[in-house]
Length: 166
Image 1: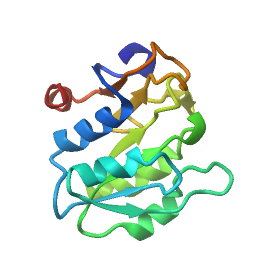
Image 2: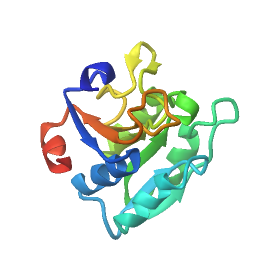
Image 3: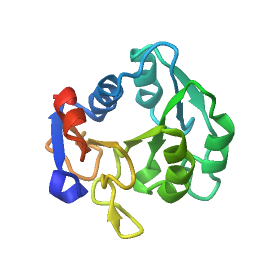
Image 4: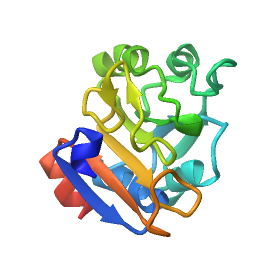
């Protein structure tokens, strides 16, 4: 999974939901923090933000991709914003260059909900590459593009994050 995603580490877990939850926990996200995400997603994307007792902030999507709109993300950022939880809707990657241009100077991390995007690429880089997101979560549920029937994985190049997720 790590090799396919272009990452140094892959931690297999029970689901993409588990991978997202553990990524936020590993980053120390909690009460008082805000996580910006898409309203156009499965409930688990927002649920994991609630699980760590952070505040979900919804930023609308682009009409043509149904992925989170970087301009809306930028408008939603406050001093409490710690993470953008992107969603590669239907396996289509978000505009990661625009998201990184907004988040990197502010020290905001990106966690990618790539439940449907294993094997996808953004400008030649595999979804899971550290240049796109700090942690990427994949799903292996029966309706996904690779499935053993159930499960998920978190991929990252950050050894400390991978160890905390484990």
